[in-house]
Image (cartoon, rainbow, N blue to C red; front, side, top):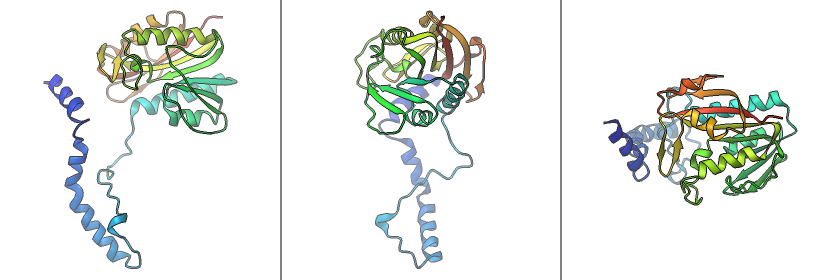
Amino acid sequence: MQTLRNLARRWIAPIADPRALLSLAFLPRFLTELHRFRKLAPQEVVSWSDTYPCLLDRIRETPFDPHYFYQGAWLARRLQEASTSFHVDVGSSVMMVNVLSAMVKTIFLDYRPLRVSVPHLHPVAGNLTRLPFADASVPSLSCLHVIEHVGLGRYGDPLDPQGGQLAAENLQRVVQPGGRLFLSTPVGRERVCFNAHRVYRPNTITALFSALRLESFSLVDDDGRYLERAGLECADGLEYGCGMFEFVKAK
């Protein structure tokens, strides 16, 4: 039954957004409140062409994606502790990277070029499987919620079953001795969800990054709870958690 629900959610939602259908139930409330607002403010002209119904935003709590919320907080605090001179990020959330660049000079590499001009943020185009950095040249490197996509064609990258392994090899290659890699990826029941992402067991990730030492592991579980400096075993039995790995390269 769970498998059928997952298939329905992943196949129907991209074609017929159920949120759009649900929003129609709140259309009468919108029309009623529009009428009330016009009566309360007769001096204001509210034309039909300017109305902008936001029918699903009236909820009790601010929504957020636990994976992206907590991984951004995790990385920012680690970088604040490290006091690095510059930082390189590969493919992570551009909103997070933009904020990080206010704290530390940041080079941002993505398969799809980022066309912006912001002080201390330097975007470059590149491929995670062929990073354009010299061996052992990067003191601080992050790659959050990215490696699981490599090789699945989601973002126009070539299909490659070994994409994750090649990405891991490149990330390890460019970290300088004593440098740190901050990596996050979905963790739990190991599988390929083509063409969205992979889900890894934490031990698979540590094996892929065997050239580095695991300094710490943090986790967002299936219920959206954040566990700071957890054991790898805390991800056992998860369906779709977010594992945050802090690696160090030996000097």
